[in-house]
Length: 290
Image (cartoon, rainbow, N blue to C red; front, side, top):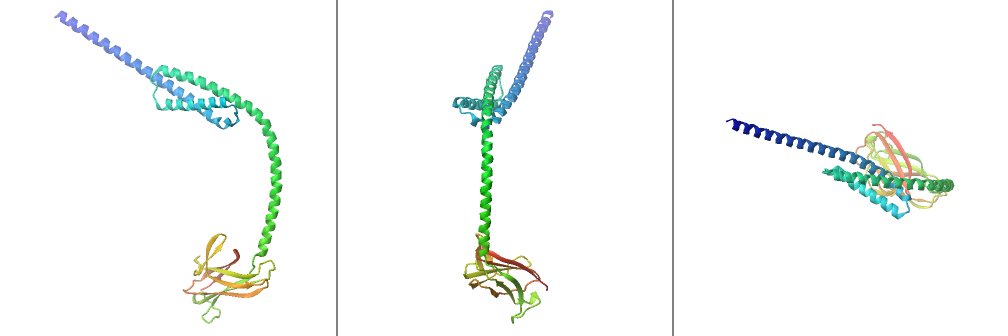
């Protein structure tokens, strides 16, 4: 019995020692894994900073004329980006790989320092060129300013000439009429609207047949009728009525254009617009009571 008891104790002690060793090994593996993760995070931060440095100098690559140096720079930049992706997406499983990445970043940082030194040197050379270029730019701006002034003056002269050719109108009126052609005081009872105006003498306006387009807009903002469209500043515009006149450069007074009313009109503000030869000749507003 005693022997059996001793055997049991020895077996229990053996299992306890084995279990303790396994726990220690698991704890050690966990510590090593945490250390790997910490090293990986630290390396990821360093590679991210180096990647930012490369990107900050990206636009300076144009100053490097040596193809060999530029090639080494591009290779280093691409390697940083590739290793950064590895550090962010893959779990490092060994200290050997951590050491390889640590050695690699030292080399890449050296390439970056060499690149920055070249940029600084070229920057000093370019600074002198920049000063000369700034002086030339200032002279060019002054010259461009003088050219712009002359162009502006010519543009004003051209506008004056174009406006001088524009057909003018004066005395624009809008009158509601009864069925017998007499004036109607109440807009709600009107059967016709009469637009009347005068075209003064203008020797600068080309003579010939002119088409006058009339747009009459009611209080609701909608056009009264739509007889057709005309082109104005490249767009198709609807008109209420139109009239052809023969212009010989002399004053034409009392020109009338009539619009037959098909529905009862509402009191309020009406707007009359006159167009000809791709110009808006006039825009007048008239208010009528009930």
